[in-house]
Image (tube, rainbow, N blue to C red; front, side, top):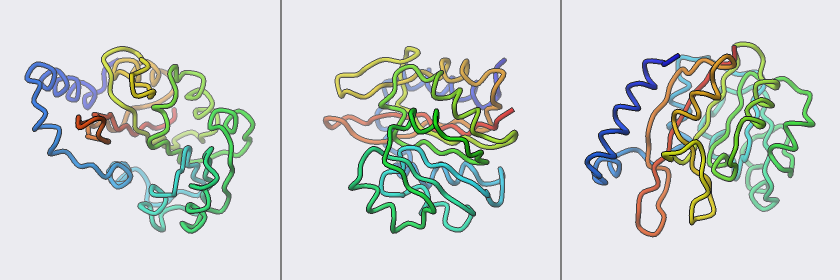
Length: 202
């Protein structure tokens, strides 16, 4: 099954690959937390329980402002969690993202994963856990570094993921509500291109 917005994004990616036009991607918005929050507009006015995986210093929750009733953040960095504590999380846990998800028994209506999936290669196990944690109709908003293969380890030490691979992972578990391409960083003076996605749990 092909979702319309996925097909549109695939056409854009083919154009970028063909032209190698760095100027095009340089004009895209860099502020990924705000972009993901904007992509959630129209999905739900508020979320009762949100889980922020790889929450870092809490930029995504800050962007959501008052749209979340209760927020749980998870990160491996104690230093970043100290900063996240100032953003209004109700619970913060220093833990590996996958291990936390496997132990967690709470159900959420929103799961966020910004700038964390690039530290995972194969995503099926983690996405299965996220599907389990989400209530039916709950939303999953995330970013990945865009790649040409299913997933690949890059020289930077981060993983990239392909659009077709993500689409396959969504099938029979999620509806793809939105998918966009954006510059998510820089590496050695080169733009790092990412894919932003919002899915809904079936």
